[in-house]
Amino acid sequence: MNHVFCHKINIDQLKAIEIEHPLFSATLLLQGAQLIEFTPSHSTHNLLWLSDTVEYKQGKPLRGGIPICWPWFGNLDKNPEAIQNQISDSQNKITASAHGFVRSLPWQVLSISESCHQVEIVLALTSSEESKKLWPFEFNLEARFVLSTTLEVELTTTNTGHKTFAISQALHTYLPTADITKTYIHNAHNTFYIDALSHWKETKQAGRIGFSEETDRLYFFKTNQNSQPQNAKPQYELRVESPMQQQILKSTYSQSAVIWNPWIEKSKQLSQFKADDYQHMLCIETANVMSDHKVLAPNQKQSLKLELSQLS
Ligand SMILES: O=P(O)(O)OC[C@H]1O[C@@H](O)[C@H](O)[C@@H](O)[C@@H]1O
Figure: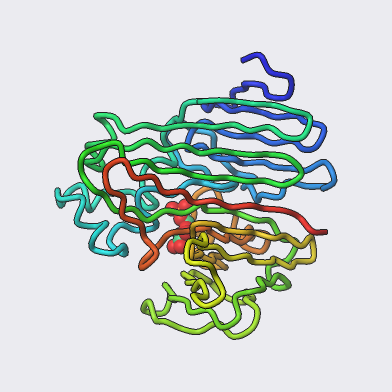
């Protein structure tokens, strides 16, 4: 690799691209196409939360940054039947790992382009005989990272086979906070959500989202049919207010978001997570889940995009 800002490095067992640019610094792991650090030069800290106890091991999902959940989100058995039924072998269904399988596979570097304004990196993953044992379809995935003073991540799925398939997916963004009890997510007022911790009950959000207990919710943002042109891309924008910073997270080609904080008890069970880490992180996951899952016919493409910026 012969670039000015991008350098290939190894972190323990994993390959990564480290980027030192006048406008930002960043670290992108090839395993899982997982961005684990993005620090704009005007910021004092990484805009992504990364566990202090993270383990850089081959084949092991890492806690922090932006893991990619694909071709199913969460536990397979909580997905719509169209997704569950694609895996016929019952043993495979039982052992199917949470959040799919691409977050722990090595991706290839497809392209890197650098300028004084930004760096664009595209990583790719293609179906193989191994992947077909886990999920019997042919696909191509591209994760495009555009890094500048703000961050853009776009995941594009192409169905390269002859069979239609269904996916749920998420860009599982971990954000840092100085104090979770003083952290709020705005712009979700009146939005319906499914509470995964309360028998998957549907509830309506009133006001801002705050955190005072374990939180695991799937929010569904409706595009207003009357005010949007017919071909408008589905999107929503959330503002995170915390003592440390204000961040804007904009999601495109998505009408669902997963909001997660494990709180006290669940924190004790998580890998690469200290007992009090829940106080300093939250996840807002740009998603296509449940009724927002996607069906792709042969040759069809589907994108999922997030943009992250810091306001203050
Ligand atoms: O520990 P994992 O597999 O990375 O998952 C972490 C969390 O990810 C969230 O997206 C889920 O909603 C939670 O239920 C889950 O616990």
